Image 1 (cartoon, rainbow, N blue to C red):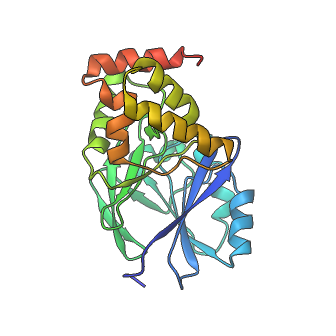
Image 2: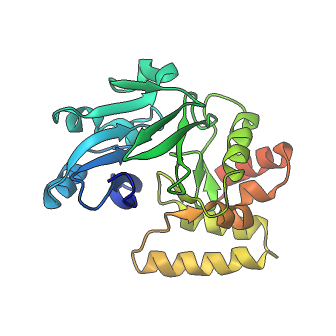
Image 3: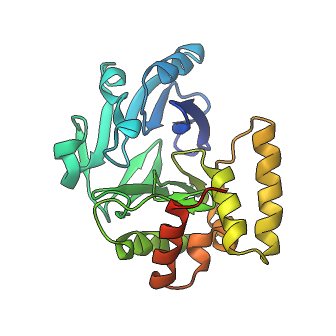
Length: 246
């Protein structure tokens, strides 16, 4: 089982959130990332005759954790999150900390320190599977809003993620890409890759298709918050995005 590839399924929840289900062929126990709503996830599990083995939490916001308690009522569900933020997370059965490495589904998981959207935010990088679950820090062609700290904190987190291998698949917590792509085209009007990607995003959304996952390489080429080139420019762009009505 340890060598079986990890399959990731998007589970749309709430208005525009995604939770994620990680599983392997032949293994009925799965990992759920950021269950902000219990019912759709429980329904998906029942349809596939699957059970939760572990829940991963990136951060404390309700739209990422509200379903944890109900789902964790199942027998022997492991709830994993940042120990430094455990006072505002659902009850954890396993605490982790940035820089730590542990194993799920037979593959290593690295805990990355990615505050900025909210303190205590962590991301989970599975280097062998080339997967990243980054909550609300990096979105497809975007990034999260600033939380309890200044823009320099979120900028540092984005730079950390941008340093991962280009072929890493990036699973973020929201379907915000159309608005993000329109903003990117607005602030970088001469960037042909952004124009092409906006057209593709429009096509996908018109067909009801998700724009998650992306890759680190794609984001380095078309995410406006990675193209600015400096912390100061990032701060300007983040404020501009707050006021953008494209």
